[in-house]
Length: 264
Image (cartoon, rainbow, N blue to C red):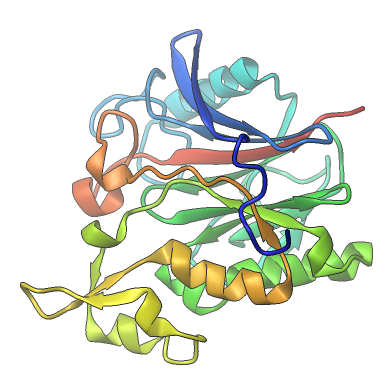
């Protein structure tokens, strides 16, 4: 069933462990997608909760304690992240990679027991996996415009000599279209997409556009032949107790999207 949401019985589930809350999606062959909420943790306002980004002004020690707690709860021994700048750049990582040492907005690996992480607070995390490879992309409007999700797929296929049809993808939570009003310059940036009218809708009040990041990224991934599986349909902007939202709070923390392939 190519290009369709595969196996409707596979769904994200919310779990709580040691005072932390997270969402989990097992996708077979030892691969697990996860998304950490802001519940728990050591950060103080305005980052209160489990802030997992060292780049937003929070106390560095609190972020380190948050990361250690999250890794323990999820059984992660090694975590790779990148210094995100809303680019279209994608990098391969392994056990020698230092967290946040490389500037990029997508990362991938074939190394078992190496978790990959992307920090988000409204932007869309795109999970890609298959045939022993895993990857994550940080897709805000800029990354989506510059096709970072497609770049991630192409990088995985080039390095591991795969066909895109061997890969699957899932979307984590991101700001909903009803909450994401953008200006005309943002709307114009998507003119080259296959069908922008399917993810840009005029706001009745302001006349501006409302952007659907998930539909825009589907227009990038499905023509490549990837199959979609269950997404985590939550809007960070609408759920302040569970998620950080930069658009809602401006100065705030970041949730962490994670993907991991367990050793067989």
